[in-house]
Length: 427
Image 1 (cartoon, rainbow, N blue to C red):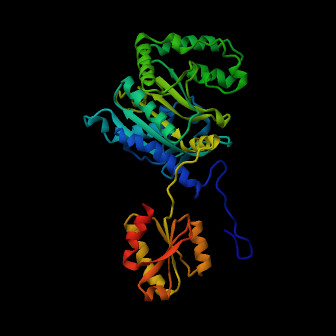
Image 2: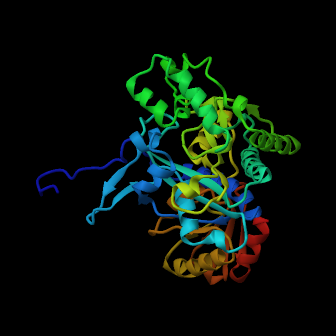
Image 3: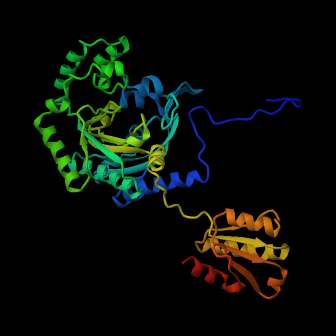
């Protein structure tokens, strides 16, 4: 705390984070709604989970060998000695909440849930990669069906398209299941053990060798050219499942690119795995992704509950919109701006603004006793289409002046006719 003779300290947002403020925040809200709207229409209900969970939920679910758990997770110890972590991703938390509430026992599977919120990872900050970031996600719990995988992918693809994005590409792969993954794992380990790798990467080979395929360092990637690919090791069931997903996407007109190296950064994925990428974002090209995670429920102490889901990065989508020069349609924050000239006008216009708001009209008021020139500048800055201006002479005649701010045209309107006239002008 500063003393009386020192300048109080000023504060900035922590490194790698950002403040979301108008007018940019309107674009973020538009993106969230573009993603959430189709989910609600497809039967997904909203879920919200705490910003922190027990560390073990993520170490067991996300995977102890992942960078998220080993390097990027924010952890803390409470006064009671509990080990907690700020949530680095959404799926494990949503599944935990569904299991805790026994949603899977209510007889209506799949349990369809969507969520929106902030997540936290100790990243090296750069464009498109933050330590605090925003996602919208969706999970379908309790059913193993390629149509469910396809549904979620189609909903995400349609959301991107509805925003006007045309350069988002879908990358698709299958990671197999408990039947065929062990054979592939052994073949991959044998190959990786023969490479020139650092000690930490060699340890990863023994814990989860698929993580090595996801390594972004050129010193590692350059040695992976001859690595065995998982599509060559899929069992008949996984091959047929993946073929069904691909056929459903093709029928729905959703193009995709097969990538046998796609494994993503989380340990819980099985079978269908996918990522949406945008080449206009540089190194941080992923704008969303997900997959099937049939074993995650058992990893965190629940019953067998085959599930699939995804998370789309709101921050990355906004960057993609800027890269393509797409402007989202954002409703005006204010349609009507009231300008009172004197105390009598303030008393008359303030209840009128309240009435308009209750009728669904976005309305604002010239607070602080501004003069007419200053108030009209505020009206124009607000983006309002209409100004309501009233002085003592107007009130004596039972009218106020309605001004169309785009054309400059102005005319008197009876006070009791103002709501009707405003709605007519706003269409």
